Image (cartoon, rainbow, N blue to C red; front, side):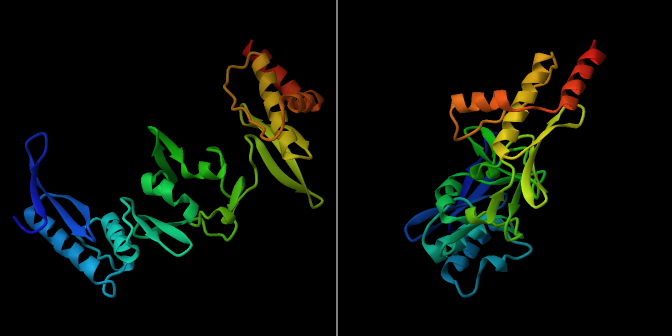
Length: 269
């Protein structure tokens, strides 16, 4: 067998070849390959990457390469920073890059390093998520951004770079379901809407919290009228039950909305 190459067998009896390399006392798996020659090439190329920092960088990944791009990043980071991660992470001085593919590198604060060293980021349908306790969890949830949030409307990347996930670069505009910020004569106001057959306006309120509570109240009105739809509820942080109940009782919702809710019930009858 070639150096660094080991013959293996799948459960169905199919033979394949595994390659690995040891660097700075760390045994690094390079993956499985269909042929012994490919596994051998992966071993030799890995040796070149690890021993020639001036010759090979992440951007030098060739169009056709026996090593997967993720392994390329892992090896170069290990070589340059002497820290091994199983995920395609490259450490910088005050942040790190997580490579989704050859052209997409996400920037994160070092505070997130431990998490992403142990959670692989996946991309599907334009959404970025990790598997956490068997569930698909959006990476935006770490910033308090809800699953229903719309970029540019509910949150923004301050510097315009939607690959920069540094905490200081993400501003949440709307924290709650059914709430949108608008400006009237230069002053922020918060509109609450609820989706029934399209979005229906509940009212306009001076604070985001009041709009969120109004949304909850409107959902309860609809449920009380027998409308069979599960409306997500807003959890209001920073206020106790008594304060919430007082605000709930005080807030008024649009008479047009109430009339519309009644009309839906009549039509269903």
